[in-house]
Length: 145
Picture 1: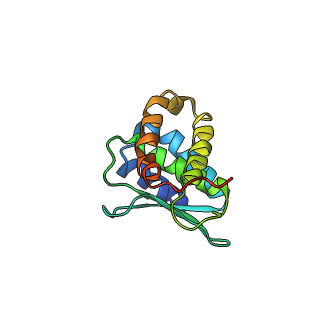
Picture 2 (picture 1 turned 90 degrees about the vertical axis):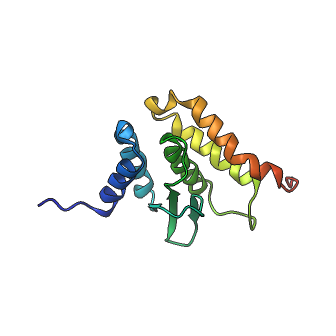
Picture 3 (picture 1 turned 180 degrees about the vertical axis):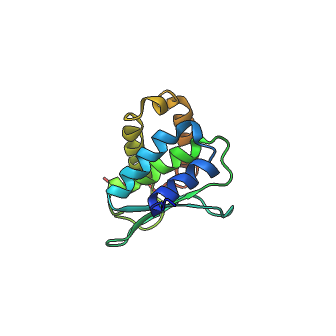
């Protein structure tokens, strides 16, 4: 009997539950990269919660919402975006901040460039990003200089 590591089980869950079989190599590489960087990741199935990240010394974690996605790729875009928050470091404000969201999406876009098969869906990525940013733009505080 083969025993899978936690990260292998998590990767399989993303692929199976997200219907991401076609992109299994990319999902595996992205999740492995996140794990190697020292960030945890998991799926969640609560309809009332969006994808999120949490920062704590030695315990940075990404939780990806698996419900309510219009396209399987949206799960990958969420993973890249939440990983972008990890890459951008600790927030310097409390609460939602358009500047921080844009920075996380910039990091996500740079990560997307590393995966040629995913890069071919840049229009889908950009549309999803803009949809996600609507609420932040609506309630944005003026950006501090």
